[in-house]
Image (cartoon, helix red, strand yellow):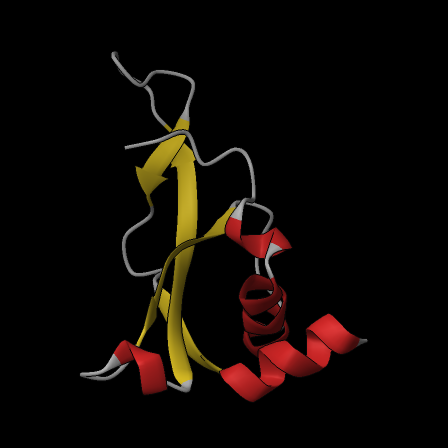
Amino acid sequence: MTDMIDSVFEEQPFGKIALQKLSEVPDNFRLYHAAWLGDDLRYSDTMRVTGAEFRMAKREPEKGLLSKMVPNTKRTVYVSAEEMRQIMEA
């Protein structure tokens, strides 16, 4: 697992919208998966965005990295292409 200390997805338009939809999340919550839905991605209008809480690993080789997903904290929201267009135009 990668170190989740940086909030990479949260800086993207879909990540900003996803966090708004999730409302309150703990400091150790990270978005870690995003995918367009549908059989033909050229016409997809909806993205599924998933995040969870992570904790620091206590053992090698990941010791000290924010890399262990906390069980039962996974949350998923759906973001439309139109929502992303609106946030990018603002």
